[in-house]
Image (cartoon, rainbow, N blue to C red; front, top):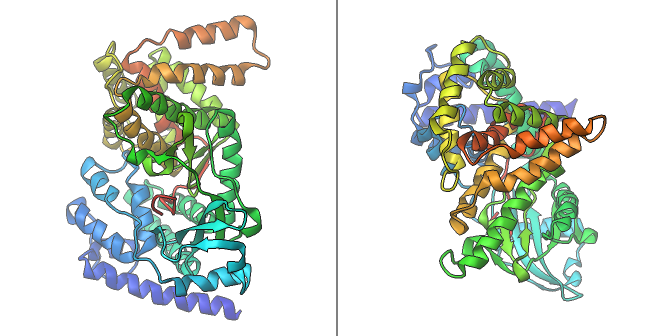
Length: 484
């Protein structure tokens, strides 16, 4: 088939280009392990890899390297703090294309007379990223909107890169058992599927509408979609009024900030725990404080999905933590990691030490990120690699925690999460459970004191979520109203 031949030639050309990039950055051993170039056969040692050099290499690879690095920055179970900090520095910011290069996409989507649908259209983009650029405009009915336009040629390049990466990952798993335990093929396949969804701007609009319907029941807001102008390569959404959380004065209006922070956190937690479909990147630029302190969410390019079965697993975890059953928690962690051959008894003892270390510690002021350092350090020590599905859930919680604690330093995540978990328990056990069983479950949950085990319950939910069947869109810091 001609199409297949053209695709193969393109892939071979790109593979050669990647080989040159690896050589330019001195990553020859890594390139050999990945099968990119025929460098001398040597083992890949962590000592040969430097975080800053790897970040430079990922930048040189292009958009897919940047997005992959951003996702890897959420993997505290795999990488040390030095690596996480370096990878987190990757930003999906690119020089904007001139409007002359963007307009053909608008013409193809809307026709030659596309301007007739607008009374105003700002030609300079408000933000530019590797996949799309965003513009401000005004419709004929005076509605202020955000127009997101996919860059021409982006899809073909990213698809070629994903094909190559998956093939290389398969080769690497066969060559090295050390690499295989990280399950790179599974990781990249999930990454690729969700990257493909990010390329579909109509899919982003549908996610905004679906999740926005649930947010509306919480008193929160998401942009309305102008479907007559929305498609695969362009979407048009309502431009929310108000102030991005990134611009809120954290010192002034403290009382108002606390109210806003609690509503923001409550919406994120309820999306994940109760709705099962949630905004995957609620950073301060994607969150608005609107009139009457209503919380607004924009940019649904990254979304997460939790199946009903996953909530049953969450309940298992909560009850194991509530009863301080370190052995049960160890079994769960091992199950999520694929039951590798490790010293289970020692793992349970180490988990018990973490619980004991902070038992009775007041939660106010304790950050999830600090707890993750302890939990993920233990996972790395035992070489327990969680499934790739956890990435967006981890990022969502950690992304939310920072601004919430900045606005409300005394925010108690355990106390605020408890009623949500009770609703989850009621939902999961409402059918076929006796009144006494429900009462016992609720008593156990209420019995959680403001101590680290309580926080571990919430934190481990996050770590655990990597193993439950989560289908996510982990790629993206895509285009949003503040910055794509």
